[in-house]
Image 1: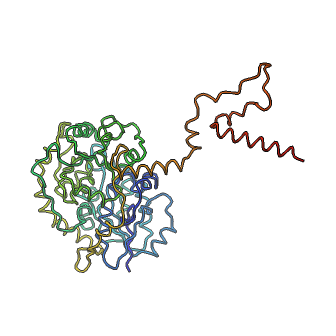
Image 2: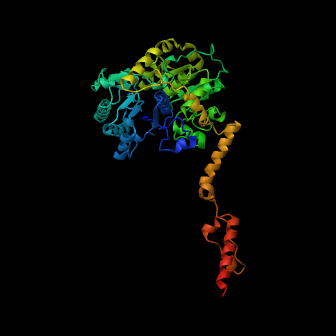
Image 3: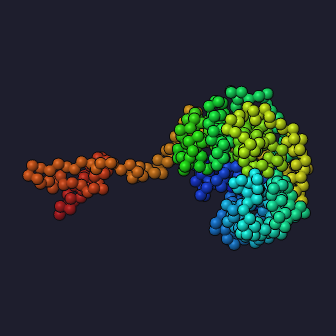
Length: 484
């Protein structure tokens, strides 16, 4: 059997609770943004051909502490390392990129990179390239060379990234523009069509928000008031923490739906998914999706639901252009934009007409690099989605305001677990009395009888039943000492 190691947060068939998803590693199992699950799960499905075992690497190949022993195990146990990436060519990912490069250089098996992109940061709509620091350019060159030593080409997400690599000396002969693998989960046949003629005040649709895009504060708040059935689907680990524990992110803006006082929170109109499959199934029942999160909208499109991208940087614009996703540039918009207007102007003709050709380009890239996929003759895995249905993936996380009976049960269990892990000692430590317990009053002679001597301060802070038990224990100990 062929064994493929896949760069991904987790195996899509492994249920991980929202609580554990957040607790694992410093930024959650999905690496801060749950959108990272989307393109890796799509690749997992695409390469799950008969006779192949696909194993998630839990991002271990780039985490601090990766060593030669890890590389040796990969060389011994796997035949291929497949590496789906997003916007990895950026300063904030530099250390991860260096560690991943070190691993790839030491591997003796083929390595194929799918969908890597460049990230220009703030103002990248005007300049899609990151600051031209020597350290980043050297790191990217070293990474690409390491990959090309073990594969025929490298797959990038769009024309911006291809141009960036061309400046670094890598031309079209070794660089394939393949887009985002998320949109190829269902092969060449994906089509998106509107299900309703127009959005109304009662329409069921979703919004996604990048918290650093200021425009979305007003847009989200106004839509919450205007559309009572609109639901917010966040992607960052800080909002998952808010939903699970009621913990607000630091320096949250009042109009952003990232605090318990926001209308969307109070009305339980926020949902967080920790698995791509449950996310897709939810969006398949919606009429529309819009916002600044590229993978939040790509999940909707993959489910056949119309979506509209508000492109705020080169990352989102690059994919929207390549896949012909309806979009507008954030600097061209005002806070008065309305979902109904975006839905009306969205045209999926180019998206639908060009998808088969984009698929052919993507499939050719896979085959040129020795990767079998489920859309090749005799390689289908028709029961993949049915198996996902059967494993019992956790449902969406609601707000703490929910009235749904099943969600209330999950919250009750979560609180019980939290209490058991902290327990009375933790509660007493957190809630010390503001005033000390009253001392025993002195006698009229100004003396305190020995039997009523004040207790030590640490004991005085304990509840009365506990103090009584201590007194009884002390009296018993004294009697035992007096016995011959």
